[in-house]
Length: 259
Image 1 (tube, helix red, strand yellow):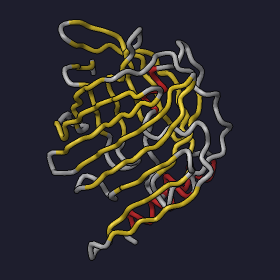
Image 2 (cartoon, helix red, strand yellow; image 1 turned 30 degrees about the vertical axis):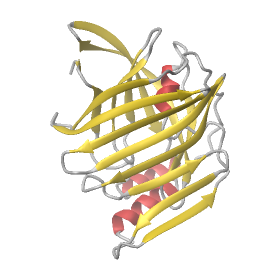
Image 3 (tube, one colour; image 1 turned 135 degrees about the vertical axis):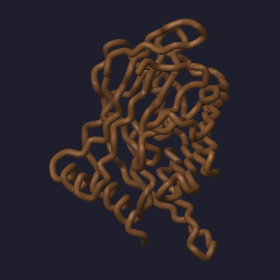
């Protein structure tokens, strides 16, 4: 195992937080079919990838796909299916990351109903290895659709936690603490609007946080900008891809934010 791979696995292995589960997020805005384009930029503002978001609805099941094609040939492709029946419930999530932009390739599938997490890896000789594990998954597991939950928060919502299954060592459960950070203006089609800003923070308390800093794997918080109203939408996401590496800003095409 490469040193980077070992450290990533070690980091997630020690971050299996046991924070109390949050109340389920109620469905306030029924998700509908949509198609959007995204632009991903580096910290310096350079375009590094083009993104595409699509969403289809069948009954109470929503399937969303967000994919990025990087200028260096890398791919980030995530497909998520969830149910919207009074509250939101994950059905399945499949996330692929590969190419030079990523420290470690990922091909990870979560089947929430069965509790099966499957990792697909390729060794140096090109041989494919598939490993599946059963994990007791919490009802609030939010792989792939945290943004959807943010679209359905009531105003002035208190901080809350959701579960996340990290794609290492067969799958490791962690907790994300989500809180409001006020508002920020943005510009689109000749008008200025305001977006609600949310912070997503992996909870690493006590000795876990100390160890994470020592091995250089303290993940940065993810920031999300949401346009509220009758048809809320995620406008911008800033954070690391895969929990490590430099922050990336991903914006809806055609919008700009004040610095």
